[in-house]
Image 1 (cartoon, rainbow, N blue to C red):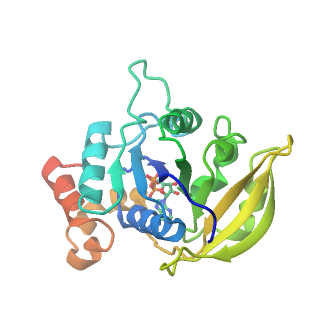
Image 2: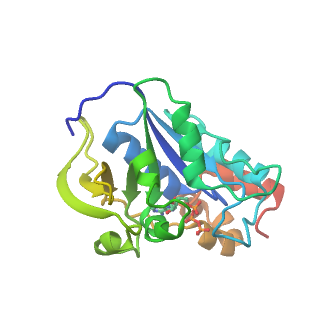
Length: 238
Ligand code: ATP
């Protein structure tokens, strides 16, 4: 991709991270390399509006595990921008992105990173049609999620025009670029990372926690070792 770049390029990566796993790391690595991002902000969510049952582990545990998962990885940072609100109100991604973008240094760009499953549910998010204009979306493919359906999943009022394909200089990560338009005629880029194929989910890890923790190399392919150690020592997901 040869777009003009000035200022820092920051990727917001929100999620339950309950627990953070190798799928999250793979998505963030691909986005960072494929789009030449300086920083990925791993942002555990306090209260996810569309998961009324909430997370299994506490916010403190999920933030601690996320810190361990990304330790030593260049450009990966833990953000507490979506920490639980004292009122207990849900955390809306649109509000978080607006406030993160307002805090960027001049010339900086904020992106919003998510997996294809999250994108397929985007139209139910508050202010869904505004989100890509606050922070262009980077959507990573995920096993079991057909990429052909993405256009149909766009929030109401948005349309997509296909663009080209490419990768950042020195990276072999494929990035497909399209353009999203709204009814007012505004446009914003939309990035797809079609090469991600990491069959790991937090819910499956929670369901099989004993097996995962006890399975040596197979477990290490699902979870960073430090996260596995934290789950063990804190007795999570039992
Ligand atoms: P759960 O199984 O509990 O729904 P999860 O594994 O999807 O959890 P989240 O913390 O909810 O994990 O996900 C945060 C973000 O990471 C979401 O945008 C999700 O789509 C993305 N993501 C998680 N795992 C993968 C994966 N294996 N491949 C691509 N994207 C992923």
